[in-house]
Structure formats: C-alpha cells, structure tokens
Amino acid sequence: QVQLAESGGGLVQAGGSLRLSCAASGPILSINSMAWYRQAPGNERELVAVIFNGGSTNYADSVKGRFTISRDNAKNTVYLQMNSLKPEDTAVYYCNTQGLALTSGIRRNFSSWGQGIQVTVSS
Image 1 (cartoon, rainbow, N blue to C red):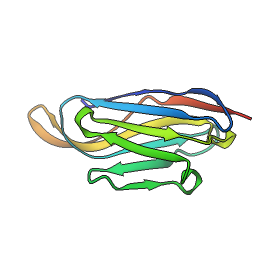
Image 2: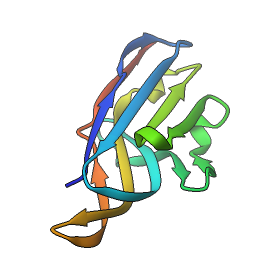
Image 3: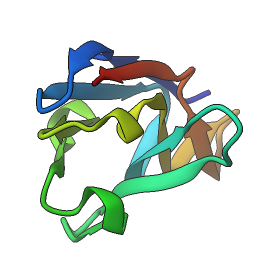
C-alpha cells in the first residue's frame, strides 16, 4: 500500500512563504504524477499544481507565478514552494500521487492521498 507523508504547513503572514513536502513510500514501481490539492472550508477540493513524470507542470490560475511544484524522483518526494501567500490561500493542502505499484505480486495502478496539512495565511 502506497502511503504519503506530508510536512511543512503552518501559520504565516500575508506575503510570506512556506514549503510543503510529500514523500511517497511503499511498493512503488513507477510514479506518473504528483500533485497538490487544497480545500478551504465550504469549498470543494481543487487542484493547485501537478508535476508529471516527464517534468511538465500545470498550475491553477490563482497560484501561477507564486507557487512552484518540484519533484525529487530518487526520493519519491514532491515539493510545493509557496511565495507571496495571500489569506485566500488558507486551506488544508493534500498531496496526491498516481502510478504503478506491486500489490500481492500484481502490478496495479494506484492513486494515493495524504492526510492533509493545514496552511493558514493571516492578513
């Protein structure tokens, strides 16, 4: 079973920076994509940024130019550098990883979620 461990959240003032990390572990054969989502109270979960196996990235319009997603393939870890944070960035951030894992001797596609980490930006 693929598990994700997130770290790096917290409280920061508007204009500040935070760096989130998410490490994947378990019987991983390959990773196709690693992404960050967020969910604010009363809102649906939304995609913030995603990085694909080849290194290409996509960002939500609301974070373009402020957030940067990167990946350490050797460590199966994805990072989200968040700069110029705004109060509207306040949310629980979730890591998602998709790929291929070896489960009970069988290659299976997987999509795993982290437990979520709180990011709070004060005005």
